[in-house]
Image (cartoon, rainbow, N blue to C red; front, side, top):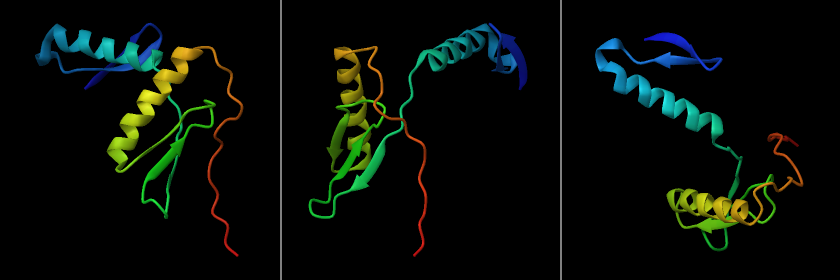
Length: 104
């Protein structure tokens, strides 16, 4: 698989035998990924209920729960869409920095 530069971004070019449709598809994927927003969700499992709960620090009001991780992921996508629908230019109150293991 070779590379090419598309609009200043290094992208992988599909093998030539796949034809122009594959190249157009790859460019569409690259465009989508550049324009898509990505958020970090903090996920915990509630011991009392057994539910997975999650919130996104970058988006106030973006929190949800689910019985499975798949359901939680679906619910997170829905809540992000709703929060952004209300205010697409919302400024985050905090940013995810990372996690740290503390041994005592």
